[in-house]
Length: 340
Image 1 (cartoon, one colour):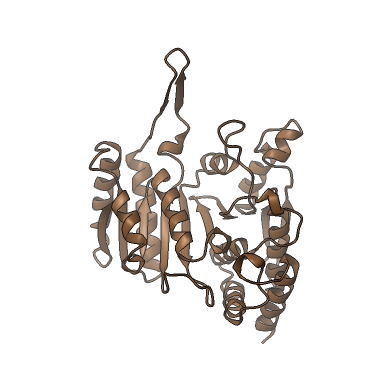
Image 2: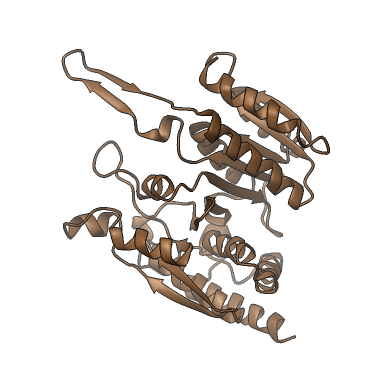
């Protein structure tokens, strides 16, 4: 069926990896009309517009689904992260980050296959901050609600159930943060009781981080609050080859944004050497969300075959191919699978 989707190329290497991903999706013979929005984040601010222009929100509310490249976020000052704004404005409360090793990639953690579920709209990223100029004290409030906790934890269990996964671990710091993390843990135990076929346990966040780099095979699905989930998802990406090969999705009850989770890498922008794998893997998640299962399988299987062969790959994963050469080779493989 035809799909109208929002396309946000972002900045830095964003336009390059986005065009490569669109090429691969088109090779899978998916009928897509893209509503393209190139003015976002730094580019928008430089033109006197909000970092997240209203027309982008309008577009996603119309199409329901967006594919987004990386957008630069200023550190310590400047505008609020576009990612945070999108998640809060569209209530994209579930951040989903699958982390599994592609064939042929060498890491010390063979066999790792995790999914991190991060609450996406509250916690320390609620943006509730105060600065007392006189005392020079900065305060940040980590807002955790029962409703917010329940819906991300239930989303995790439902996702696990639908995909045949049988183990959920809840990450928390309830030994110290007895009210906020304690609430999240209490709700987790309540929800887990409704899914007796799924093994449930909980781990204190610092102990979990240590165990993940020693025994990642012990874990399957991990759910946590916003800040802890952010840290865990990058840690898990490191187990499987880095952010350049890891997919990401932000999903709510009405809208979904699928994105590259890595940065905009302005130092290599325009050089045609960026790896589009992360955004391509995110596009696979998007196609499954749209019930385009055959196209998603064609891209996923072609990508895994290309990595297994070891060429042509981009320099960050040991190859010598350009972004466009990688995209051309993958698109050809996808087209062959679709035609077969």
